[in-house]
Length: 218
Image (cartoon, rainbow, N blue to C red; front, side, top):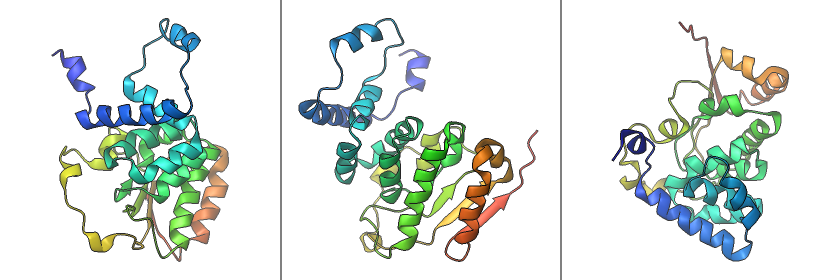
């Protein structure tokens, strides 16, 4: 197998599960029509995974209703697509159901806009204001640091066996202490939203752990 193909591969379960997602969407509301397919022939052909995500996110309410049964391994790519495409309802719902300890948003800050970034904060607020969380939510840290090679690695780490690990059933639905970790350089990305974000942080400093770092880059 060519090296460039191997480098872009994801676990087989990703492709299989996205086939399921595509079928679920297309059975209810066909999203990809012949003119669109013809247009694709003159562009870079999207992968099956991308087509499935686009179909699922085309109906935000449908996507949200599917989160409860969505395989954990599909959360990172689906969140990344939803954040980039600014599907704000889905973004907030995925934060509330985030099945990993860390949400490495810093890897996506180049795509941050006022609406999709606010959707993440709205999801954090929901968790912060409720004592009982969704069953699969494990979120503890919102990381705005640009320290990961990609969003996938920031979520699951460099090991590829994370989805086989057993989760302590006694932690299901229990509120966790939330922490926001950021770099001062991040404000160059947020630009006009800086003051609103700083106000958000100040208003929650008694209920969340807020950590800022000044990183010197070469």
